[in-house]
Image (cartoon, rainbow, N blue to C red; front, top):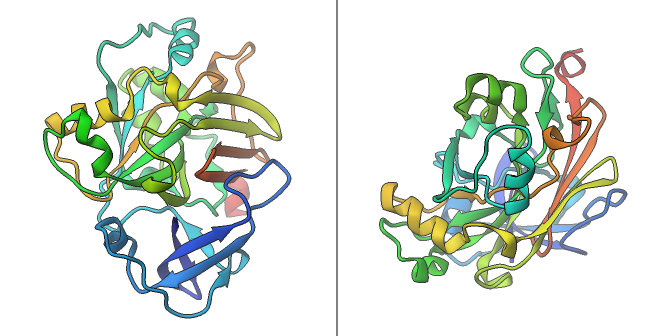
Length: 291
């Protein structure tokens, strides 16, 4: 089941999405409908069964919003979690194979809606980079969750594009500022419930820029699997329903390429995960957005 958060005629709602395909290519937009339900996204994450209300709406009639609960505290993110990404990063800056998960935090203000343009300000950074990631939505919270019980705590999965200001990230050493530029991290387009993918999910993650593939890998290539990430994070932080864990990006990011590549106004970025969906993001400059 695909659960979306959307705005229709000025009202924010939750709904069940039916689409023709889970992912799309660079030329085809997702098509389908969303059936509004009485529950909020938070209620659905807490385990309430969806109760339909009203007629189904075409996806072109609604504005999809990032599928985060209203009280979501942000994204718990993992860095350097694919070996080939570690290897490409090590050529640019010191990045050893981590012995333990590298965890950082994205605030809610960093999140962008899946239907919104990605407005990037050259005055903030000239090196905005892409990072496709599988997002894990927690359905049942807890502390000290054993790895072998982690699957029971997952509500579903979404797509995250962890857009990063590389010059800011490297300038300040600690990652927070470069990873938390306002409205620069698209999340969505919806949440696919955990029963659709099994546990642990073995799915391809990929990203294209203007139709050219930049990233492709499979979640089985993660250094730290989802169960271990949940066990480690919950040892220190009580996980809550609605928390989103971004599980790391594979190789192919822009700053490691020769010559380096970064996002520019007009680019179309598609971050996709098999069985989950695709984020289609058009990049705009801040100057164009205010013109």
